[in-house]
Image 1 (spheres, one colour):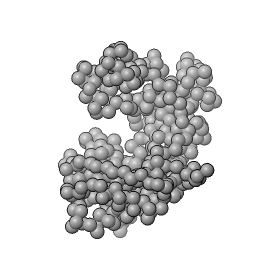
Image 2 (cartoon, one colour; image 1 turned 60 degrees about the horizontal axis):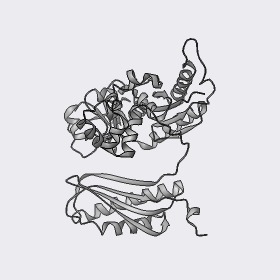
Image 3 (cartoon, helix red, strand yellow; image 1 turned 90 degrees about the horizontal axis):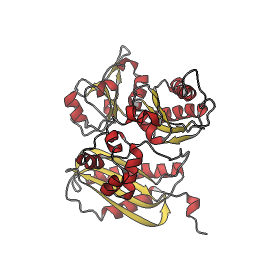
Image 4 (cartoon, rainbow, N blue to C red; image 1 turned 135 degrees about the horizontal axis):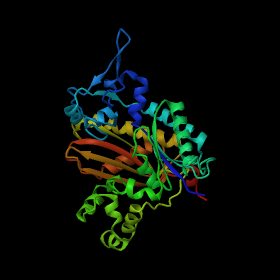
Length: 381
């Protein structure tokens, strides 16, 4: 039985959800990342008035953008101020995570009706084991992979019917290749590859496309003259181990040759939960003490709600501070007993803050709960 793993990635997910609400914006450059003051306003004649990036002066960051906006050089993670310089005419919409989570639940339920073995990788992507899905091993006409291709199309159709949204699906023998394949024909793509397709479809890609090869690794590989996956594959494992260490070098060799035996994991316990906020302006620890206190209280309350709603307690509590010069510090406090209520979390955060010399204005504040466990698991005996 041939192993088939799919990676499903929703197309420009947040932006696509917004276009369902505001279909008049289809074809227009749209950026998601504004605050509530950028919410569309209903006019007397029934049409919507939309905010644009024109004159944006805040500290926000783009969460995502439509493909039309991406064509103008806008992308997720870009500051909205920089985006405004590039495309002031682009529409700016606020984020609505409640709606995105609702649509996420819908598309995952739709996939489960076709293929139930699913690994959740976030709000807009999943891995799916198609190996034993009925029809996936069939030959259709002269297409030896026609059966699994039909299953992939059935999944895409189910997602479209349930949500009105499009997705891109990559189907290969493993998770690493499927992640790459789902990007090849975006948006609204379906790509089926085998190891025989590596030289033509995978090796010409940049090593940056491999999930796990970050900026530092890219720089180190570039020093060896390696820029594509094919160039990486040309190095033998011994050479890579000599340059990058035994474990990492071996992984690079295996990844370049499309080898990955990781299973689709249907459920895993989270290691931590966190909440953070970036301020509209940098806050001073003394002059803006009240605003900082309110922000911390709000983050702690939301984190406590997350823990209680999902049924976890925390053994460690941490804080994260990003200063005006973009330097980041973190501190962590280990607790004698697991906690989940806001008051205890707030006290622990206070202990963390006492260990940070705050001499610069604060740009970002975050709180984190780690060492998560179920309350029953923390009981003695």
